Amino acid sequence: MMFLCLGWTKNHTIPIEKALLNNHFFKETVIQNYWEADSLKKKYNCIVCGKPPCKCDATVYLMHKKTD
Image 1 (cartoon, rainbow, N blue to C red):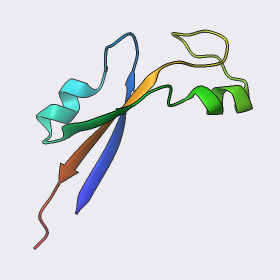
Image 2: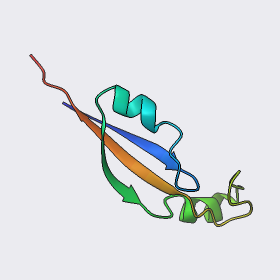
Image 3: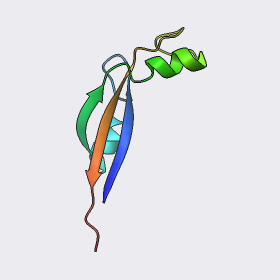
């Protein structure tokens, strides 16, 4: 079984990273400008970037868990 979690990456900081790493997740990859198209389509403001487009990245974390 595999679990996936996206970590919002703002100004090169990932607020949830410590919690994920402490719970056996590992960093897999970074998706640049993850919210760009969505923020333009839905016209929402990012708390870091301000008006669209959002330029924040998403960091993908995975955890593999053995099943019995």
